[in-house]
Image (cartoon, rainbow, N blue to C red; front, side, top):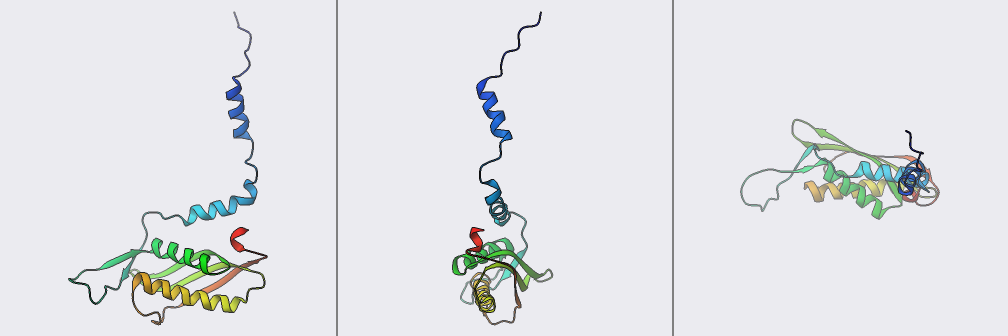
Length: 158
């Protein structure tokens, strides 16, 4: 004997409804959420040889992960300038684990003098490198800055 069909539990129906319904406003923030996830630190980075301070006792080597340099640089650029770094890539000599150059792609704000912004970003990048890896800020590392997009307002808010 078949029992009459009972309606599904109200809690079950609510769960099913919520799973099927899109989150309000998700389309507007999806890009920022995906970018934030991509910027999070993850294991397995490339080691970068840092200069040992001259006054440090003993011998040894200090390495800094490229993830640490990338995230520190991205935070510093976002805090100082009206821009959104979209890519920060490093040219690393795999034989010596030394940094040879940096490529930064970013979104700028309409009306910002882009050449001046790029110049400031180069200087800040060299300062961050000097702080984390040591050495002179004028050691000839090429810092390539490319503006790939320009938006009205704050690029981080888009």
